Length: 144
Image (spheres, rainbow, N blue to C red):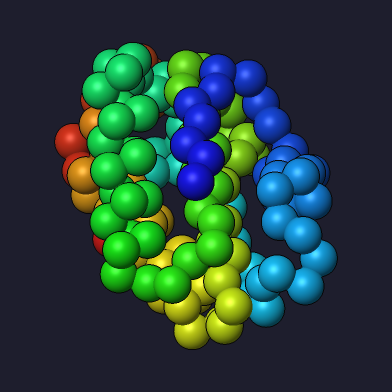
């Protein structure tokens, strides 16, 4: 299991490949399911120029690790990777990468979706959007 919070932009596809080649021997897994969440340039009917993603260092990582541990206890996962941005984010930037490796596709798909849904509902992040006319805190997540 790997959970990382990072402040700099990242390429999710190279991180996925790097992680897979570094930690999982070829033939050890039969399925990889991944999700990349990217910042939109709109929300609630308004243009969004940027977003600042706040977190509590230490607390946020512990909650993400708790989420991954719960998922691993429910599905047969060989490895789970979560990389999540914090700080200043621009439209088009990847915000989160979730990847799950398993022997079979069903566990990989279901576990990956469960991690993403838990992140959206439980992870302690706070979003402040920069709009053309000012800024606002996002009060709720978008629906699934």
